[in-house]
Image (tube, rainbow over all chains, first blue to last red; front, side):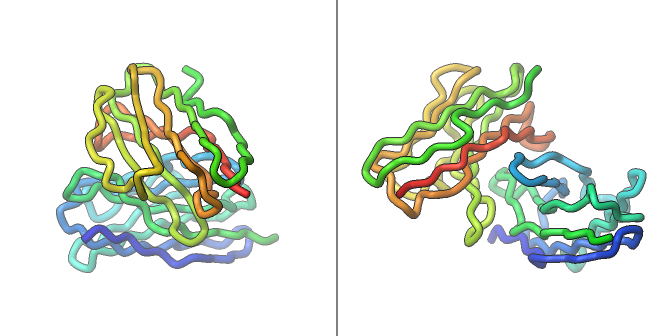
Amino acid sequence: GEDVEQSLFLSVREGDSSVINCTYTDSSSTYLYWYKQEPGAGLQLLTYIFSNMDMKQDQRLTVLLNKKDKHLSLRIADTQTGDSAIYFCAEISNTDKLIFGTGTRLQVFP
Amino acid sequence: DAGVIQSPRHEVTEMGQEVTLRCKPISGHDYLFWYRQTMMRGLELLIYFNNNVPIDDSGMPEDRFSAKMPNASFSTLKIQPSEPRDSAVYFCASSKGLRTEAFFGQGTRLTVV
């Protein structure tokens, strides 16, 4: 089946690290994505990871992939108030559809 | 390129009325997607096109929903007749390929009263 799950909310203090978790079901996914949605806007691609990688780092962002457990995480170092948004993980399903998770609302407080 | 352009940004309509949402994808993108976002169901893929041809419409909720792509630069999503449960934000996205980055429009917030 096609199912991508995330926790709904995460609240962190400015300057701390944020870790957003995601589990997916389709083991044939070749790419896994993290998208960011700011209030009143569409989704923007933040980063992606190819399924043969365990980790990808891009400035403050670190993506970890555990294929065995079908678990994907996004770590944001030194979280800023501007990082407050909804974060979606997504996978390409075996039917070639881009399936999104439920989204995690990240709130950063001073 | 101005990105994916959707219109209108907001639409309020009465139950039973026809609603048409519009999308202009990024030039050169071969894929166009329509998504619906609600609090209860998150982001759902309704339909997607490849080179103007509908490939998968299994996410279209019912016959009241229809989508067309008459040319590479324009697509519509129509709801006829609309119902209050259709209230949601509808996003259009386009991409060069299925596994490449999808670029989203700003969305149309539809309210059916």
